Length: 426
Image (cartoon, rainbow, N blue to C red; front, side):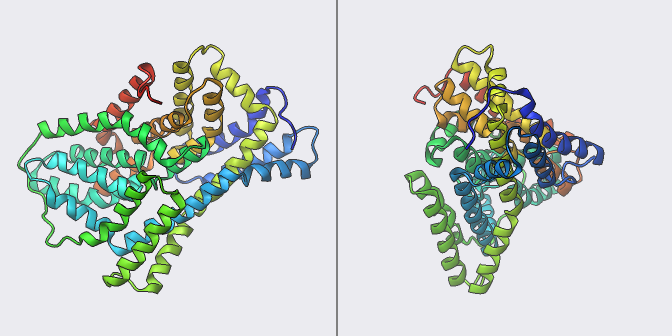
Protein backbone atom coordinates (compact mmCIF):
# COMPACT_ATOMS: atom_id res chain seq x y z
CA UNK A 1 0.00 0.00 0.00
CA UNK A 2 1.23 3.45 -0.88
CA UNK A 3 2.57 5.48 1.99
CA UNK A 4 0.64 8.65 2.79
CA UNK A 5 1.92 11.74 1.04
CA UNK A 6 2.51 15.00 2.81
CA UNK A 7 -0.48 17.03 4.01
CA UNK A 8 -2.50 18.12 1.00
CA UNK A 9 -5.64 20.26 1.06
CA UNK A 10 -6.65 19.20 -2.47
CA UNK A 11 -7.06 15.62 -1.23
CA UNK A 12 -10.21 16.76 0.60
CA UNK A 13 -11.97 17.51 -2.70
CA UNK A 14 -13.82 14.14 -2.78
CA UNK A 15 -15.22 14.83 0.70
CA UNK A 16 -16.40 18.25 -0.46
CA UNK A 17 -17.98 16.61 -3.53
CA UNK A 18 -19.80 14.14 -1.29
CA UNK A 19 -21.14 16.80 1.08
CA UNK A 20 -21.82 19.24 -1.76
CA UNK A 21 -23.92 16.86 -3.83
CA UNK A 22 -25.92 15.75 -0.81
CA UNK A 23 -26.31 19.15 0.83
CA UNK A 24 -26.89 21.30 -2.27
CA UNK A 25 -29.08 18.67 -3.90
CA UNK A 26 -31.20 18.33 -0.77
CA UNK A 27 -31.59 22.11 -0.48
CA UNK A 28 -32.66 22.35 -4.13
CA UNK A 29 -35.11 19.48 -3.67
CA UNK A 30 -36.26 21.01 -0.37
CA UNK A 31 -36.02 17.53 1.16
CA UNK A 32 -32.98 15.97 2.82
CA UNK A 33 -34.24 12.48 1.99
CA UNK A 34 -34.73 12.94 -1.76
CA UNK A 35 -31.04 12.67 -2.70
CA UNK A 36 -29.75 9.09 -2.19
CA UNK A 37 -26.66 9.39 -0.04
CA UNK A 38 -25.19 6.36 -1.82
CA UNK A 39 -25.17 8.35 -5.09
CA UNK A 40 -23.22 11.17 -3.42
CA UNK A 41 -20.81 8.59 -2.01
CA UNK A 42 -20.33 6.96 -5.42
CA UNK A 43 -19.63 10.30 -7.13
CA UNK A 44 -17.10 11.27 -4.45
CA UNK A 45 -15.41 7.87 -4.76
CA UNK A 46 -15.00 8.28 -8.52
CA UNK A 47 -13.44 11.72 -7.98
CA UNK A 48 -11.07 10.30 -5.33
CA UNK A 49 -9.86 7.51 -7.63
CA UNK A 50 -9.53 9.82 -10.64
CA UNK A 51 -7.46 12.45 -8.81
CA UNK A 52 -4.99 10.06 -7.14
CA UNK A 53 -1.61 10.93 -8.65
CA UNK A 54 1.36 8.68 -9.47
CA UNK A 55 -0.91 5.63 -9.36
CA UNK A 56 -2.64 3.60 -12.04
CA UNK A 57 -6.42 3.25 -11.91
CA UNK A 58 -6.01 -0.37 -10.85
CA UNK A 59 -3.69 0.59 -7.98
CA UNK A 60 -6.05 3.36 -6.83
CA UNK A 61 -8.99 0.98 -6.90
CA UNK A 62 -6.89 -1.49 -4.92
CA UNK A 63 -6.25 1.11 -2.21
CA UNK A 64 -9.93 2.06 -2.24
CA UNK A 65 -11.00 -1.58 -1.91
CA UNK A 66 -8.63 -2.18 0.99
CA UNK A 67 -10.18 0.77 2.81
CA UNK A 68 -13.72 -0.41 2.03
CA UNK A 69 -13.00 -3.91 3.32
CA UNK A 70 -10.90 -2.93 6.32
CA UNK A 71 -11.26 -5.24 9.31
CA UNK A 72 -13.21 -2.68 11.31
CA UNK A 73 -15.48 -1.85 8.38
CA UNK A 74 -16.37 -5.51 7.83
CA UNK A 75 -16.93 -6.11 11.52
CA UNK A 76 -19.22 -3.07 11.60
CA UNK A 77 -21.17 -4.45 8.64
CA UNK A 78 -21.66 -7.82 10.34
CA UNK A 79 -22.95 -6.03 13.42
CA UNK A 80 -25.36 -4.02 11.25
CA UNK A 81 -26.61 -7.26 9.69
CA UNK A 82 -27.26 -8.91 13.06
CA UNK A 83 -28.74 -5.72 14.55
CA UNK A 84 -31.14 -5.44 11.60
CA UNK A 85 -32.24 -9.05 11.98
CA UNK A 86 -32.74 -8.63 15.73
CA UNK A 87 -34.64 -5.35 15.50
CA UNK A 88 -36.99 -6.59 12.77
CA UNK A 89 -37.72 -9.95 14.38
CA UNK A 90 -38.47 -8.40 17.79
CA UNK A 91 -40.80 -5.90 16.14
CA UNK A 92 -42.60 -8.73 14.33
CA UNK A 93 -42.96 -10.53 17.67
CA UNK A 94 -44.65 -7.50 19.24
CA UNK A 95 -41.82 -6.70 21.66
CA UNK A 96 -41.97 -2.94 21.00
CA UNK A 97 -45.67 -2.84 21.92
CA UNK A 98 -44.93 -4.91 25.02
CA UNK A 99 -42.30 -2.40 26.22
CA UNK A 100 -44.63 0.56 25.66
CA UNK A 101 -47.50 -1.20 27.44
CA UNK A 102 -45.31 -2.14 30.41
CA UNK A 103 -43.99 1.38 30.96
CA UNK A 104 -47.47 2.91 30.68
CA UNK A 105 -48.77 0.38 33.20
CA UNK A 106 -46.12 0.97 35.86
CA UNK A 107 -46.01 4.79 35.69
CA UNK A 108 -48.55 6.62 37.92
CA UNK A 109 -50.84 8.98 36.01
CA UNK A 110 -49.91 12.01 38.13
CA UNK A 111 -46.37 11.69 36.80
CA UNK A 112 -47.34 11.14 33.20
CA UNK A 113 -44.90 13.63 31.56
CA UNK A 114 -42.01 11.99 33.41
CA UNK A 115 -43.54 8.60 32.60
CA UNK A 116 -43.67 9.32 28.88
CA UNK A 117 -40.05 10.46 28.99
CA UNK A 118 -39.06 7.29 30.86
CA UNK A 119 -41.02 5.16 28.39
CA UNK A 120 -39.25 6.79 25.44
CA UNK A 121 -35.83 6.37 27.12
CA UNK A 122 -36.43 2.71 27.93
CA UNK A 123 -37.95 1.90 24.54
CA UNK A 124 -35.15 3.53 22.53
CA UNK A 125 -32.49 1.98 24.77
CA UNK A 126 -34.04 -1.42 24.10
CA UNK A 127 -34.73 -1.22 20.37
CA UNK A 128 -31.77 0.99 19.44
CA UNK A 129 -33.59 3.44 17.20
CA UNK A 130 -34.93 6.88 17.96
CA UNK A 131 -37.13 6.94 14.85
CA UNK A 132 -38.70 3.59 15.81
CA UNK A 133 -39.40 4.90 19.29
CA UNK A 134 -41.00 8.05 17.91
CA UNK A 135 -43.19 5.95 15.60
CA UNK A 136 -44.28 3.74 18.52
CA UNK A 137 -44.97 6.45 21.11
CA UNK A 138 -46.03 9.55 19.19
CA UNK A 139 -49.57 8.22 18.46
CA UNK A 140 -50.01 7.63 22.20
CA UNK A 141 -48.72 11.13 23.00
CA UNK A 142 -51.07 12.58 20.38
CA UNK A 143 -54.05 10.76 21.86
CA UNK A 144 -53.19 12.00 25.35
CA UNK A 145 -52.93 15.56 24.06
CA UNK A 146 -56.28 15.32 22.30
CA UNK A 147 -58.05 13.82 25.32
CA UNK A 148 -56.63 16.20 27.89
CA UNK A 149 -56.04 19.44 26.01
CA UNK A 150 -52.36 19.64 26.97
CA UNK A 151 -49.91 21.13 24.47
CA UNK A 152 -49.20 18.69 21.66
CA UNK A 153 -45.76 20.11 20.74
CA UNK A 154 -44.75 19.83 24.39
CA UNK A 155 -45.79 16.21 24.83
CA UNK A 156 -44.38 15.16 21.45
CA UNK A 157 -41.06 16.82 22.35
CA UNK A 158 -40.97 14.65 25.48
CA UNK A 159 -41.08 11.57 23.25
CA UNK A 160 -38.39 12.90 20.90
CA UNK A 161 -36.06 13.75 23.80
CA UNK A 162 -36.38 10.32 25.37
CA UNK A 163 -35.88 8.67 21.98
CA UNK A 164 -32.55 10.47 21.57
CA UNK A 165 -31.39 9.23 24.98
CA UNK A 166 -31.56 5.59 23.90
CA UNK A 167 -30.24 6.31 20.42
CA UNK A 168 -27.10 7.65 22.10
CA UNK A 169 -26.62 4.77 24.55
CA UNK A 170 -28.19 1.61 23.11
CA UNK A 171 -25.87 -1.28 22.32
CA UNK A 172 -27.69 -1.97 19.06
CA UNK A 173 -27.96 1.65 17.90
CA UNK A 174 -26.32 2.46 14.54
CA UNK A 175 -24.55 5.45 16.09
CA UNK A 176 -23.10 3.40 18.96
CA UNK A 177 -21.85 0.72 16.57
CA UNK A 178 -20.34 3.31 14.23
CA UNK A 179 -18.69 5.27 17.06
CA UNK A 180 -17.14 2.24 18.75
CA UNK A 181 -15.89 0.63 15.54
CA UNK A 182 -14.35 3.82 14.12
CA UNK A 183 -12.63 4.44 17.48
CA UNK A 184 -11.75 0.76 17.90
CA UNK A 185 -13.12 0.36 21.41
CA UNK A 186 -15.62 -1.96 23.10
CA UNK A 187 -19.34 -1.23 23.29
CA UNK A 188 -19.52 -1.68 27.05
CA UNK A 189 -16.52 0.62 27.63
CA UNK A 190 -18.05 3.37 25.51
CA UNK A 191 -21.33 2.90 27.42
CA UNK A 192 -19.60 3.35 30.77
CA UNK A 193 -18.10 6.65 29.69
CA UNK A 194 -21.15 7.85 27.78
CA UNK A 195 -23.66 7.16 30.56
CA UNK A 196 -21.65 9.28 32.99
CA UNK A 197 -21.89 12.21 30.58
CA UNK A 198 -25.57 11.99 29.65
CA UNK A 199 -27.14 10.50 32.80
CA UNK A 200 -27.09 13.90 34.59
CA UNK A 201 -28.91 15.41 31.60
CA UNK A 202 -31.55 12.68 31.72
CA UNK A 203 -32.03 13.13 35.47
CA UNK A 204 -32.35 16.92 35.17
CA UNK A 205 -34.90 16.50 32.37
CA UNK A 206 -36.80 13.91 34.40
CA UNK A 207 -36.95 16.30 37.36
CA UNK A 208 -38.33 19.04 35.11
CA UNK A 209 -41.14 16.72 34.03
CA UNK A 210 -41.75 15.58 37.60
CA UNK A 211 -42.23 19.18 38.69
CA UNK A 212 -44.70 19.66 35.85
CA UNK A 213 -46.72 16.69 37.08
CA UNK A 214 -50.36 16.69 36.13
CA UNK A 215 -53.40 14.49 36.43
CA UNK A 216 -53.89 13.89 32.72
CA UNK A 217 -55.05 10.35 32.02
CA UNK A 218 -52.94 7.86 30.11
CA UNK A 219 -54.32 4.87 28.22
CA UNK A 220 -53.94 1.80 30.44
CA UNK A 221 -53.01 -1.40 28.61
CA UNK A 222 -55.35 -4.28 29.33
CA UNK A 223 -52.74 -6.99 28.99
CA UNK A 224 -48.97 -6.97 29.47
CA UNK A 225 -46.92 -9.58 27.60
CA UNK A 226 -43.81 -9.34 29.73
CA UNK A 227 -42.23 -12.45 28.22
CA UNK A 228 -41.72 -10.56 24.95
CA UNK A 229 -39.37 -8.11 26.67
CA UNK A 230 -36.91 -10.88 27.57
CA UNK A 231 -34.82 -10.61 24.35
CA UNK A 232 -34.17 -6.91 25.01
CA UNK A 233 -33.23 -7.58 28.62
CA UNK A 234 -30.86 -10.36 27.52
CA UNK A 235 -29.15 -8.03 25.07
CA UNK A 236 -28.79 -5.23 27.62
CA UNK A 237 -27.55 -7.45 30.46
CA UNK A 238 -25.10 -9.54 28.42
CA UNK A 239 -23.71 -6.48 26.62
CA UNK A 240 -23.09 -4.64 29.89
CA UNK A 241 -21.54 -7.84 31.30
CA UNK A 242 -18.96 -7.74 28.51
CA UNK A 243 -20.09 -10.52 26.16
CA UNK A 244 -18.89 -10.03 22.56
CA UNK A 245 -21.40 -7.94 20.62
CA UNK A 246 -21.80 -10.61 17.92
CA UNK A 247 -22.68 -13.19 20.55
CA UNK A 248 -25.01 -10.71 22.24
CA UNK A 249 -26.99 -10.12 19.06
CA UNK A 250 -27.07 -13.82 18.14
CA UNK A 251 -28.41 -14.60 21.62
CA UNK A 252 -31.06 -11.91 21.16
CA UNK A 253 -32.09 -13.26 17.75
CA UNK A 254 -32.35 -16.87 18.97
CA UNK A 255 -34.34 -15.87 22.09
CA UNK A 256 -36.69 -13.81 19.92
CA UNK A 257 -37.34 -16.80 17.67
CA UNK A 258 -37.92 -19.19 20.56
CA UNK A 259 -40.27 -16.85 22.42
CA UNK A 260 -42.07 -15.69 19.28
CA UNK A 261 -42.77 -19.23 18.10
CA UNK A 262 -43.67 -20.43 21.62
CA UNK A 263 -46.19 -17.62 22.12
CA UNK A 264 -47.67 -17.97 18.64
CA UNK A 265 -46.57 -14.48 17.62
CA UNK A 266 -45.15 -15.90 14.40
CA UNK A 267 -44.09 -19.19 12.83
CA UNK A 268 -40.59 -20.23 11.82
CA UNK A 269 -41.13 -18.98 8.27
CA UNK A 270 -42.40 -15.57 9.47
CA UNK A 271 -39.43 -15.32 11.81
CA UNK A 272 -37.03 -15.87 8.91
CA UNK A 273 -38.97 -13.38 6.79
CA UNK A 274 -38.76 -10.77 9.52
CA UNK A 275 -35.00 -11.25 9.89
CA UNK A 276 -34.57 -11.01 6.12
CA UNK A 277 -36.47 -7.73 6.00
CA UNK A 278 -34.33 -6.32 8.81
CA UNK A 279 -31.10 -7.31 7.05
CA UNK A 280 -32.32 -5.88 3.74
CA UNK A 281 -33.27 -2.67 5.51
CA UNK A 282 -29.62 -2.23 6.47
CA UNK A 283 -28.55 -2.36 2.81
CA UNK A 284 -28.07 1.37 2.24
CA UNK A 285 -26.19 1.78 5.51
CA UNK A 286 -23.89 -1.12 4.63
CA UNK A 287 -23.17 0.32 1.19
CA UNK A 288 -22.44 3.82 2.46
CA UNK A 289 -20.22 2.33 5.19
CA UNK A 290 -18.07 0.62 2.56
CA UNK A 291 -18.05 3.71 0.34
CA UNK A 292 -16.96 5.85 3.30
CA UNK A 293 -14.19 3.39 4.20
CA UNK A 294 -12.76 3.40 0.68
CA UNK A 295 -13.16 7.15 0.25
CA UNK A 296 -11.40 7.98 3.51
CA UNK A 297 -8.57 5.59 2.70
CA UNK A 298 -7.84 7.43 -0.56
CA UNK A 299 -8.11 10.78 1.22
CA UNK A 300 -5.59 9.47 3.75
CA UNK A 301 -3.25 8.16 1.04
CA UNK A 302 -3.34 11.54 -0.72
CA UNK A 303 -2.57 13.45 2.49
CA UNK A 304 -6.02 14.91 3.14
CA UNK A 305 -6.47 13.55 6.65
CA UNK A 306 -3.05 14.87 7.71
CA UNK A 307 -4.01 18.28 6.34
CA UNK A 308 -7.37 18.32 8.12
CA UNK A 309 -5.85 17.23 11.43
CA UNK A 310 -3.18 19.91 11.16
CA UNK A 311 -5.84 22.51 10.34
CA UNK A 312 -8.14 21.51 13.20
CA UNK A 313 -5.36 21.22 15.78
CA UNK A 314 -3.06 24.05 14.67
CA UNK A 315 -3.93 26.28 17.62
CA UNK A 316 -4.70 23.49 20.08
CA UNK A 317 -2.30 22.84 22.90
CA UNK A 318 -4.27 20.46 25.11
CA UNK A 319 -6.88 17.76 25.33
CA UNK A 320 -9.81 20.12 25.86
CA UNK A 321 -9.19 21.80 22.54
CA UNK A 322 -8.72 18.46 20.82
CA UNK A 323 -12.00 17.15 22.22
CA UNK A 324 -13.70 20.36 21.14
CA UNK A 325 -12.40 19.86 17.60
CA UNK A 326 -13.81 16.31 17.55
CA UNK A 327 -17.18 17.66 18.67
CA UNK A 328 -17.09 20.41 16.04
CA UNK A 329 -16.17 17.97 13.27
CA UNK A 330 -19.07 15.61 13.89
CA UNK A 331 -21.54 18.48 14.34
CA UNK A 332 -20.52 20.01 11.00
CA UNK A 333 -20.78 16.64 9.25
CA UNK A 334 -24.20 16.07 10.81
CA UNK A 335 -25.45 19.48 9.66
CA UNK A 336 -24.46 18.57 6.11
CA UNK A 337 -25.76 14.99 6.02
CA UNK A 338 -28.76 15.20 8.41
CA UNK A 339 -27.81 11.68 9.51
CA UNK A 340 -25.88 11.10 12.73
CA UNK A 341 -24.61 7.64 11.74
CA UNK A 342 -23.23 8.86 8.42
CA UNK A 343 -21.70 11.87 10.19
CA UNK A 344 -19.82 9.56 12.57
CA UNK A 345 -18.65 7.33 9.72
CA UNK A 346 -17.47 10.40 7.78
CA UNK A 347 -15.22 11.83 10.52
CA UNK A 348 -14.59 8.81 12.74
CA UNK A 349 -11.13 8.06 11.37
CA UNK A 350 -10.09 11.70 11.68
CA UNK A 351 -11.42 11.84 15.25
CA UNK A 352 -9.44 8.72 16.15
CA UNK A 353 -6.24 10.23 14.78
CA UNK A 354 -6.83 13.44 16.75
CA UNK A 355 -7.52 11.39 19.89
CA UNK A 356 -4.28 9.43 19.45
CA UNK A 357 -2.24 12.57 18.80
CA UNK A 358 -3.46 14.28 21.99
CA UNK A 359 -3.66 11.23 24.24
CA UNK A 360 -7.47 11.12 24.45
CA UNK A 361 -8.93 7.79 25.55
CA UNK A 362 -10.72 6.24 22.56
CA UNK A 363 -13.67 5.32 24.74
CA UNK A 364 -14.05 9.02 25.40
CA UNK A 365 -13.70 10.05 21.75
CA UNK A 366 -16.38 7.47 20.84
CA UNK A 367 -18.69 8.95 23.46
CA UNK A 368 -18.10 12.50 22.25
CA UNK A 369 -18.76 11.51 18.63
CA UNK A 370 -22.04 9.80 19.52
CA UNK A 371 -23.25 12.45 21.97
CA UNK A 372 -22.59 15.49 19.79
CA UNK A 373 -24.00 13.78 16.70
CA UNK A 374 -27.20 12.96 18.61
CA UNK A 375 -27.35 16.53 19.89
CA UNK A 376 -27.13 17.95 16.37
CA UNK A 377 -29.53 15.39 14.92
CA UNK A 378 -32.04 16.05 17.69
CA UNK A 379 -32.43 19.75 16.95
CA UNK A 380 -32.25 19.63 13.14
CA UNK A 381 -35.61 20.67 11.67
CA UNK A 382 -34.76 18.56 8.63
CA UNK A 383 -33.55 15.53 10.61
CA UNK A 384 -35.44 12.23 10.40
CA UNK A 385 -36.53 12.35 14.06
CA UNK A 386 -38.27 15.72 13.95
CA UNK A 387 -39.64 15.14 10.45
CA UNK A 388 -41.17 11.86 11.59
CA UNK A 389 -42.66 13.39 14.74
CA UNK A 390 -44.03 16.31 12.72
CA UNK A 391 -45.44 14.01 10.05
CA UNK A 392 -47.29 11.89 12.60
CA UNK A 393 -48.86 14.90 14.33
CA UNK A 394 -49.29 17.51 11.60
CA UNK A 395 -47.03 19.92 13.51
CA UNK A 396 -44.06 21.88 12.20
CA UNK A 397 -40.63 20.65 13.38
CA UNK A 398 -40.00 24.21 14.58
CA UNK A 399 -43.01 23.93 16.94
CA UNK A 400 -41.45 20.87 18.58
CA UNK A 401 -37.89 22.22 18.83
CA UNK A 402 -38.95 24.90 21.32
CA UNK A 403 -39.87 22.20 23.86
CA UNK A 404 -36.86 19.91 23.38
CA UNK A 405 -35.30 20.04 26.83
CA UNK A 406 -33.21 16.86 26.82
CA UNK A 407 -31.01 17.43 23.74
CA UNK A 408 -30.09 20.95 24.90
CA UNK A 409 -29.33 19.82 28.45
CA UNK A 410 -27.38 16.83 27.07
CA UNK A 411 -25.31 19.19 24.92
CA UNK A 412 -24.60 21.43 27.91
CA UNK A 413 -23.48 18.40 29.96
CA UNK A 414 -21.24 17.23 27.11
CA UNK A 415 -19.60 20.66 26.85
CA UNK A 416 -19.08 20.71 30.63
CA UNK A 417 -17.59 17.21 30.41
CA UNK A 418 -14.96 18.60 28.03
CA UNK A 419 -14.27 21.71 30.12
CA UNK A 420 -14.16 19.88 33.46
CA UNK A 421 -12.45 16.77 32.05
CA UNK A 422 -15.28 14.60 33.35
CA UNK A 423 -15.34 11.71 34.00
CA UNK A 424 -11.71 11.92 35.12
CA UNK A 425 -11.35 8.14 35.22
CA UNK A 426 -11.33 8.17 31.41
